[in-house]
Image (cartoon, rainbow, N blue to C red):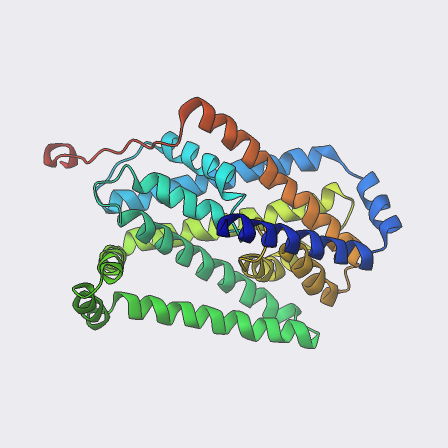
Length: 321
């Protein structure tokens, strides 16, 4: 019953936010924007979307190899797409991440490697994304709101770097290890911490994951940019680099279905500070959300055909040679 109540609340929040935005938006302008829809750029956005998921899968493969676990890239890619079928119905835009970590973790000899890999990849992705956003915002932030966004971006970036340093610090790991003897949840946390901390040992792996995260960030921004062009809206690409990361963070708040409504509100609120009409930013956000629907549909088909199991392989010493 509690699950159904939470689902109803999240659906209600999404509908309420969307209705509020529709009420505040010039519907005639929005209808005119949607009639200018150019499918060529929309198809390009879909292709970029699946390229983004391929880089996401490749990054997972790198981190799993660091744990001496080999998974075929096609299996991880299928798992990435499939995760959207279930993850779309979870609160916040991080739902697919949770499902993906769960599905991959089922096939690993040490299940803690899945959440630690997810945490490592996402932290590298966020740091690279916000580094690019902070640099661009430094040059284009003119309004008070955008200047606040600039400050918060750099504060968040420094906070993440600090958390990374704390997480891998031996004293912190020792404290968690001591607590792990007192409660099973601390025991699980210690395993994840211990798994996560070893990622920094190989600087080449860290660099490759960070560069992959940067690539994913620019591909995500490119999707939004192509959607705007498909609607006949000309906004500089660098504006998306600067502002989309903030929208992504807001959409992680777990109060709606897949961030629907929250993301659109953030889009309208943040882009309005660059002089973009609400009808334009609202249209971009809604059409961008349809890309998630494509992932959800294709993920459902892949799940029906292949299921969610991901086969892993631990290389022997001879294979490593």
